[in-house]
Image (cartoon, rainbow, N blue to C red; front, side, top):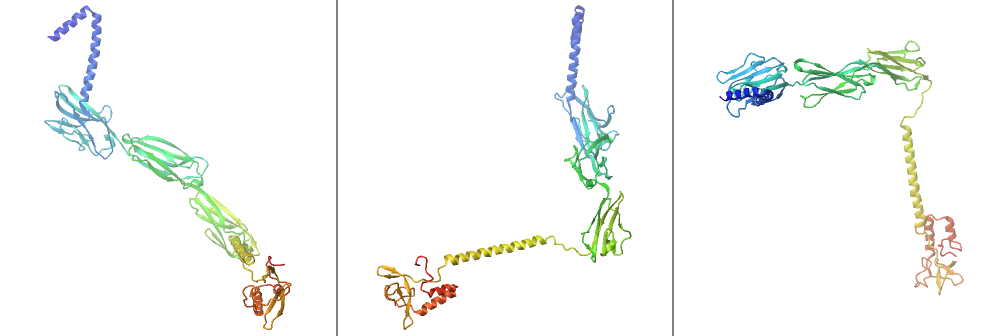
Length: 489
């Protein structure tokens, strides 16, 4: 009845106002489209799935699906999983029915897919023994009443660890840049990135190539103009990819082939007549290793006194026959190189100081000079001590007090019968009572006089201590020779 009234009202409006009716119809169409899209969006959201899942070959993956019915008015009749490897291809891989149970149609997933719980509300599945070919879109589709089919789609991304490798390319030395090393990250997904870590001064180029099941192979080549010095030099290839925990780094040693480099060692410019076992050694480096070494003499056939063993030439006894030029020629697969040395025979042996004789002699002379300086300093100090700081080795006769004045003693006047020596002051009477120091005992309490023998003993002791003869002689003259500066008149 309501529909009829609405249609009648709509017909009346069209008859009275055609323009208004046309506009209203347009608005209704737009509103209906918006409502339909909204309903579809709501319905599509009722099937809950994961938008994208990543997995690795040989592993297992769970694809989750759940139906959300807020009002409980939708009846679920069946659920199916559909695999879409490419656009337009749909293959059923699993079906669940509440009455008839589970079904797994023939497909690449036969015996590899199972329902985790086995219910309409949660029909999640698990796929095992994955391969790169399993990548694609997986749709969880419900058959419902009264809304019809509802679905949700998960994109399964298969990741592949690249197979990394790096090798050196054997090249020959030259001025033109060539490929000396290659690095490859094969069948990786997503594609790997490659860079070189090197100080060789070259450059590199990288390219990518599609591989099986959506994987990508990345190849990088390192180039330079190789020299013999580059042989054995190390560079590193570094591969970075999502599936790797850390960058993969592989060192590569370059292999550069070059002809031998030759030198002759052992000649010391001292080949004198009669010298025995003079030796020359032919040193050679090359890549590949030298295969042959040949000695020749510029003057002609090799002298009889010469013996050759590989790279070693020995002159058993030096004579004029070895006064020539020796040539060493070395060959490898790449080329031939040679080197020569001219040996000059001399009549007599050159005497040369050893490399360490000069420093040793200089060290000895320096040590002797240092010792001489130390001894001189010690003698100088001892002489200063003996001359200035030591006590005098003689005692001059002291002055004698006469009354209130001091007078110098004069020469001895006479010898007493008992052997005693008497001194008298200048201008006075003889003094017969002196002590060992020449003091008048009459003025010092009347001590015994000094005997002549004691004086002689003292003079002998002074002579023994090293006094000059003239000093001893002066002691026997009128004027005393040993007097301090303060007492001499």
